[in-house]
Length: 461
Image 1 (spheres, one colour):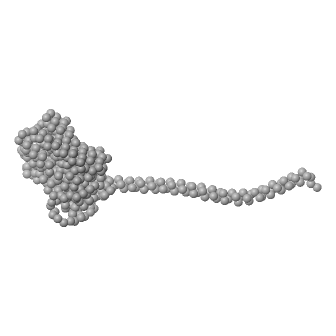
Image 2 (cartoon, helix red, strand yellow):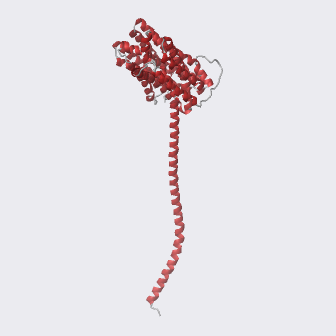
Image 3 (spheres, helix red, strand yellow):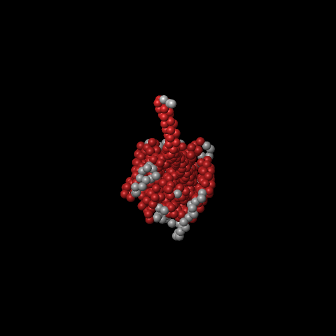
């Protein structure tokens, strides 16, 4: 017979076994759903995090690709400006060489400016037809012959033995430049597309002024350091033009929009772009007239009045002038068009004040300052005008409208320096240049006032 203690122990042990058996299945049943829910939640959180990381990586890759595509397209736009650069490098390459030809051929300052003016005549003649043909037929049928004419002009410069040959070479250069101004700049805009109009305007304008400065600098350096001072630069220029010809030939450009009416006419402006063209001319014309003086009579002023006979100085001065015109266009990109145009007018006015002061004081630094401010005035006037036009004019009228602005700018750039040249033959270089400065100063002030009243507030770049 068991003792009470033993019985109690047996009962307790039995209860413990029953509780253990009972608790184990219950815990297992209860724990299994809880673990499943917890695991599901953990998996969902983990998946969400993985999805977020994956999406972030995909966004980063997508953005990188978009940035790469954008950079590639921007580079394509700048490459499209190469033909503009190559032709404009020829436009002023003869500047430091006029002194050599003047001594060898024996012509006056008036004849020198007349030779320079043949360039303007050719340019304006091209503007009367190139813009219309480019918009109707296409850019390429205008660009390829223009580059060919520039190569022919280079050959004539390299072998020039008379004033007539120099005049013909300048005339052909002007025709080539006029075609490039119309069709070449419009082609840059075509290649850039609607979303890159501002980049295209900057690329075309920069290529124009940088090329215009690079040509005379290279000519001055080569003429002082290598044999054949009036030949070497033009051989190099032919090579540059040949590369531009190949580039244009490979372009896939849109065909012209067609149209009726005369093929030779003063460039017509679309109604929406008339104010933009007028404002651009008001500032661009005095600026490019100031730079034309430096390019035509500048070497005579340097050698006869300021005692600087080294051709590198004349070429370097032209380069610095156009380098300033290029740099200022990058610097003012955040500004409104009105501010850009007003700055251009102020710079041209300052240039003419410095020009007159340099003549009265026989100061080379003041003459350099006059050239730099002239370049700034032209660069700002050109950028402001091109930007306003590209924003207001449809693509199929862009080349002709650009031509209209350039006609308005280049007319006084031809007439006033030639007048100053012949006036200098009659009354002296100092008096003739001073009269020129007074006229351009007045024009710049009037242009600035007109721009303040009529220009828009859109950004320049």
